Image 1 (cartoon, rainbow, N blue to C red):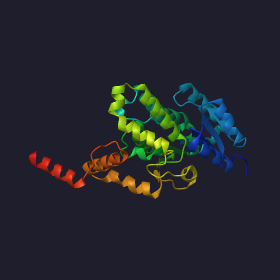
Image 2 (cartoon, one colour; image 1 turned 120 degrees about the vertical axis):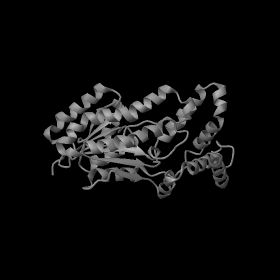
Image 3 (cartoon, rainbow, N blue to C red; image 1 turned 135 degrees about the vertical axis):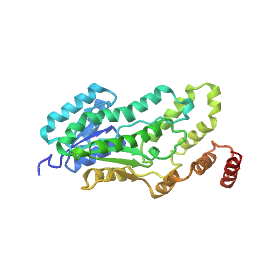
Image 4 (cartoon, rainbow, N blue to C red; image 1 turned 90 degrees about the vertical axis):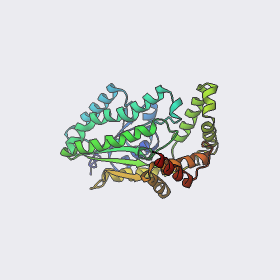
Length: 312
C-alpha cells in the first residue's frame, strides 16, 4: 500500500482542539491530510506532530483568496483522484446576552461559522465530486436546543443544521454523502477562551449595562474559578475524534451523529417538550445558576397558562 492509497482528506480548522486531533489521527492511519490553519507557527507545530503526508494550508475561511489558493493547491496535488473527505471543523464562539453582544463579534461569528463554511464547501465540491467523497460538518448541541446567554453562537449552529440538510439533498446526484456531527460539550481550550472573552465584554460595558447583567457575569466568574467544571459533563477529545473518523470511513454513513455523554443526550430531549415547559426548565436552570431570581414551580406555570387560555 502506498502512502495515499487511503485517500486525501481536507480538514478546515485544524489549528487546535478537535480539528488538530483529527488531522493527527488521520495522518497516523495513512491518509494524506491537508490541514487548514491560520498561521505559519500553527503549521510548524502541526508538522512536528505528523508525517510528511500531512500538508498544512494557511487558510482563513473568511478570506476568499486564501480559500481559492488552498483549493488550487489541493487540486494540483491530487489530480483526478479528488478528495475522499472535507471536514468543516472551523468555528468560533463568543458568548454573552444578545442585548449587549457587540455587533462586530456577531458579524464575525456568522462570517466564520456560516458564510465561511459555505465558501469552503463550494470551493472543494469539485474535488469531492471526482471521488464521490464525503462532507462532514461539525455542529453542536446548541444547534437544536435553546442555549440562553450563548450569544449568536447557537443561531450559527442552527443554521449549520439547515445548511447540512441542503447540501445532503443537493449533492446526492453525485454520490456525495453529507453528515452532521452534533457534538455535546467537549474537553477543550475553548472554554478558557470564552472565559477571557466574557471578561473583556464586561470591562467594555458601561456601569449601567454591567448592572443589568451582573448576575450573568457573576455566574461566569464562578464557572471560571471552578476551572469550567460546572454544567453538563464533557466528552473527551478522543471520543469526539473517534466518531468523526467513523463517520468519514464507514460504508453507510448517517446524516446525523449526536456525540455526547449519556446524561447530555437525556438532557437534550427537553427540546421535544412544549415551549412553556421548556421555558420553565431553562428558567429553573438559570435559578440554580443565580441568574433567575424566582424559583420556578411547574404546577404554577401550568395553572397560569390555563387561566390565560380561559381569558382569551
